[in-house]
Picture 1 (cartoon, rainbow, N blue to C red):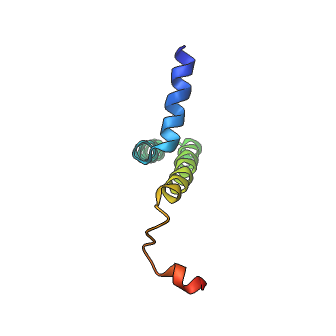
Picture 2: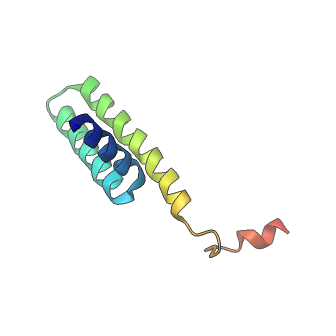
Amino acid sequence: SGSHRNGLSRNNINKNPHNLERVIEKYKNLAKEALGIGDKILHENYLQHSDHYARILSEVNKRNIPQETPKTDSNKSIE
């Protein structure tokens, strides 16, 4: 049942913007540390992870924006 719990928490990360922001921040810090010790490959690796989660975050944020309250007048320009 341990792996089942892990699967659930992984799904929660993908749906929770706050968790995603923490994960992105973690990888950015790890990337900085890797660069600090001169490990460019590890640095790139961590940056790719943070980019990956940043993309998920922007998708989640798009989905979470309520459609009935547009913040701009972009819906008028469609007409």
